[in-house]
Length: 483
Length: 98
Image 1 (cartoon, rainbow over the protein chains, first blue to last red):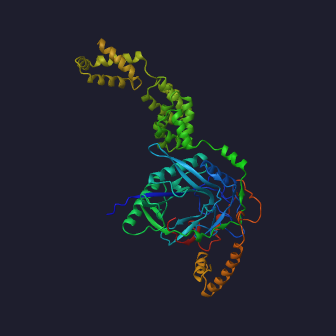
Image 2: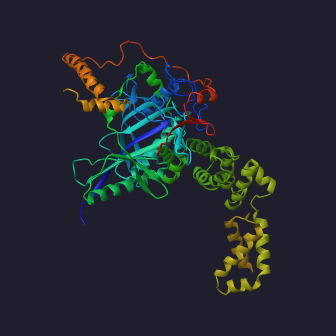
């Protein structure tokens, strides 16, 4: 057995379908699914004589992304034809951007690792192209059926720089997660990996630790979750090492990820780049950006996820994990901040939001920011707890009722009479419990402190959770002293 | 550097052209003639001249992101040499994977 240790280097190509109303070069609706071939026209079917016209919104979405990823913008950007024959490509070529002037070049994305350290992943290009059609597999028919609804949907490609900065399956997953989060914040992608509207394709290669050379890379496809990205890279690195250890070589090829078996499966050998015969698209004139326009787009960018995570941690003193979880979805983070501003305890808002409200929302299949419990209502609930009007235990009951009825916390508390019991009321209950349990009281007096817990439990039960633990302990102490 | 008949056959297969031996030989000759012309152009000093992708110096017109009606499916399907009426799509040779 050889002792060679290998390290993995991972390049990443990610594709995101843009969130436009219409397709990239024609007015057909850009929407997922639908009855096959109901959203096509001469342009996206590649019929002779049709001409493509740029969708302004798609260009702007790529520009926004490129700026958010700290790219330099090509003031003069051109489009190319990538020629190949495949049934999903009706024109026989894909309109894409090749060479040195894609919309964005030389940017980076920061990822935050589990230990809190931040790593910069360099990005070499952000470009605009069009999506292909989709095959519907006709079971047992011996043929495939093509649906061109997706043909011509605007597609953005984001490619990491060489040599790769990503050095593990975990980093590959973190990169994909961070990128998705940025795209969601920019509102340029719906981020649905399971539907294929966001696709992450890692290119892992391995080399002996200390080697200056890079190994042969393979390309992984069909990774439809973040977990699959990490597992796929880890599996592939091991497979490549096993090939080398067995005296074979790694062959440049495309592998599909089999989620069920947890293995990569050879799909096809990789085309050589020259075989695509790229050339400038004669049907499209170059796009020239003026710097004023670029700056206006830059100025319109929202606060991005990593910056927001850091701010939430500091401003509201949130634990790192909570801040990360809140920020992963922009609407959830907005909801939190709106609620936290109206609440007397921001940490408690985060706890209720990530705890009970998320649980209720998940069970109902609703985004947490769109349930009947509004940001103001959640703040109200937290304020009632802070003010001592209700106990935390009762609050759990209150939020359930708020979720069902859409009432505010104050309304629910008033309607159901859930206000904390007054000291007089608690004192009465304590007296009753002591009177009913003379044997237990005798035990406590005899030095058996454990029995005190039994009495406290009886009081809580009788008060139906509305008594403050502090009150119970204090009044129990007094009553026992006098008993 | 001259093209060989083998190069021509491989370019032909990328373009899905079934070339006869005769055609392969003829096109090898034609294409090498073209390459010679380009070799002459290559002699020009283009230092400092940006690569030209388009001859007309105008910037692209962009359209607003508005949805327009698509073609009716029946009309689209009717263009296919072979269609699957049930699935509503064009029949193509079996595609494996994505």
